[in-house]
Amino acid sequence: MNKEYELFGRKVATSTLIALLLFFVGFILIMVVIIPQFGNIGQQREINMLKQTQVGTLQRSLAALNSVSDQRLASDRQLLTSALPANKEVISVFSSIIGLASQVGIQVEGFTIQVGTVYDVDNKDAEVDVSSDTGFPSMNVIVSLTSTDQRQLAQFTDLLYKKFPIARVNKVTAHQSNSSVEISFYYRPYDLSQIQNTTEIPGYTNESLELLKKLRESQN
Amino acid sequence: MKTEINLTVGNKAVKKKTYTMYVFWLFGGIVAFAVMLMVINLILKLQYSSLDSQERDLTTKINAQADKKVNMLVISERIKNINALYAKRGDFDKQLNELVSIFPSSVTISQITAEHNEFTLSLSAKNLQAMNQVLENDLPAFLKEHQKEIQMVDVNSFQAQRGDYLLTLRFMFPGGLSDE
Image (cartoon, rainbow over all chains, first blue to last red; front, side, top):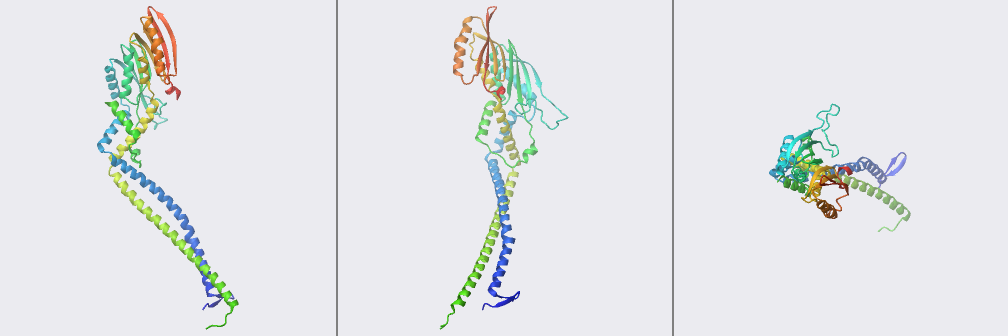
């Protein structure tokens, strides 16, 4: 039954031959299939994990999109861009200051604007940045006022902080009835095309809802 | 019935059989392991394909709401920046209002100089009693109430001039830009 063959001048049993053949095939399997599969599995797992993360991000983004109405978004965007405009809103700033001053019985005598660099040949792409301490471009306005009582000036800054929640009063000088207030109004342009390429859409957090509430209160 | 048993030959044959069996088992194991790895790889590829289709589906749904997406991204960008500015803004309005509220109406605030966290207020009063009220009662009461908020208070000067009593006070608040 276990027939013998002559191989290289030696008698070898069939079972030994089969065993040798299997050993050889097994070795080939290890080299050609098993070892490369290990690498492939590791690589595929990493790719899948990355994909899973991307899908997770998209799921969260879609959930965030579906959680708010179009009207709410439009209103919030308008509120936030009025708080931090994309450009210098000179006219609206002036008219608001005049309105606030008249509310507390102060008269606006004049404005001086320090706009900052409009064009710089060495730094064409940089944002115009008047006050670098915050890292935000700003329009600095010096308002000359006439008041009968300095307490009105305090009321004016109070109203100003409510109306412009991110404006900052840098300096106040008041002598008798004349006073001047130096205010920084911040703005920040945004690149819509860059924003559109963002894949993750963050939803509203408690912190952002709190901020929106605060801004909405200041507008009323 | 077989009566002759050659134990020597038989023993040799059993040894050979065992050796071949090991090779068979080893080969079987290798094949099974290779198949298992291929199945795992296949499962992972199927999983990827399912994730990929999910991704395409979600992207289509998101792109269908492109305007909403832009609004949300702009909102998120503005919120981030506004929060950053809020953190650096300070409480100038609150501080100035607190300071002017210290003094009674009998005292006139004739001069204010305020920059960052430093406020200098010049006060004038027609009678000494009013100034005394500020220095002895109003100011200490305010400082007691705002101990943690005020860093330093200086009486820069106190003088009498042509029937008016003039007092200059300098207040320093902690924090603000000068401390950054």
